[in-house]
Amino acid sequence: MTLHPRQPRPSAGGRDVSPHDLLATIVADCARTRRVQGHPPLTTVLDVPEDHAIEADPAQVRRVLEPLVKRAFAAAAQPDAGREVTAVREVVVTSVATGDAFEIEVADSGPGLADHVRRWLSQTGPSTDGTVPEGAGLALAAVRAAAARIGGTLRAVNCPEGGVAITLRLPCRQARRLAA
Image (tube, rainbow, N blue to C red):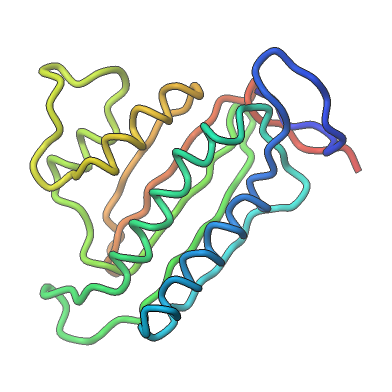
């Protein structure tokens, strides 16, 4: 998987997926669902460059990103008993291209994840006993497996101001900057 110009090019591994376009659609769908259900809107930030593409099966990339964004929307809407002041309820999706990888981070202002769930989510390879830790949920188990299928890894950290940030890291061979 590599980053390249948006003109679709045939490839052995899939076709071009625009992380920005895919994430914009997912965020809009989540916001629309909240509105239809009568919930107040959340603050959302999408800071993913439009000039990146991932050469991959779009359905597989969506299997990683959609549950992460949905989880962030659900978590951001939950009160955090550990904080006395109600935080701004938000979901922030960002990305960065480093020298050897492309990373997409989905962060929320919710209650965060238990330490054992964060450690499990960040492990590479199958879990030693094949079980999903209590509190992880089947959605995170599916995200973890889907990330491995596209050659990515996940990292989860609880944010000091509250909430959790989950980062999908794709090696450079999977992502590259588009030509201008």
